[in-house]
Structure formats: structure tokens, C-alpha cells
Image (cartoon, rainbow, N blue to C red; front, side, top):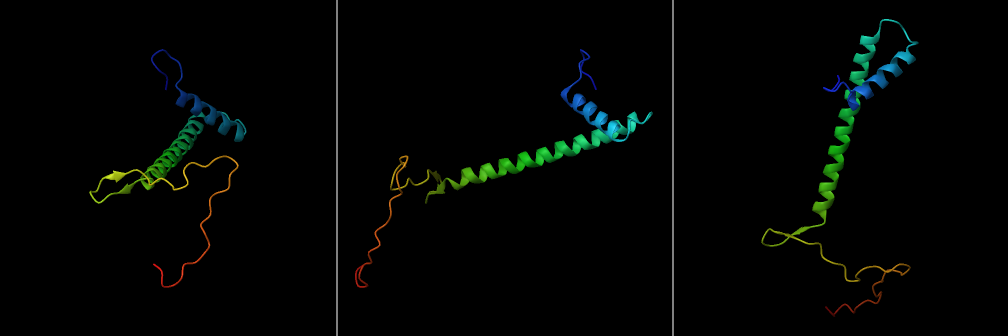
Length: 108
């Protein structure tokens, strides 16, 4: 399929390359151009469908990751993630550790 100014579209160029590869792989037989084109269309459609599934999965994962960064408040609205006590990390510093001393059992 060509556009109105008779230049091939990107999809047509991809089909041509795939059909040519199939033709070469089959030993360059004469008279099988339509079969090679049909096989190229099927292969390209499968590649495009796989791409659509991959992009949809990535978008779903991104949506879940963004959703995980918010929490619901009592009013049902989204709130920003709770900031960490330590603040931003400085390069080359170790993370703060909690005290390991235990409180007596009677203290609360």
C-alpha cells in the first residue's frame, strides 16, 4: 500500500523486508510472491500484536506503581506518600539504624 504521493509507508517497507527475507530463506522460488507477502503480513501482525500487549502490560505496571505511591485518607481522597524520617540520602552515607536496646517489659 502506498500513500497518495506514491511513497511507501513504514508498514509497507517492513512488509517488503519481511517478504524478501522469507523469499530468500525459501531459496528464492519464482511465482510465490503473493504467498511470501501473505506470510509477511501474518508475521508483522503477530509482531504488532505482541508489541501492543507489551505496551499494555507496561502501562498497567506503571499505573500500579503510581497507585502504590499514594494512600487513601479517612475522607477517601488520595494523599501523598508519607516522607521518611531520615530525609534524603546523602551520597556515601550509611542508613541510620534503630537503637537495639530493649525496654523493660513493664514500660509502654
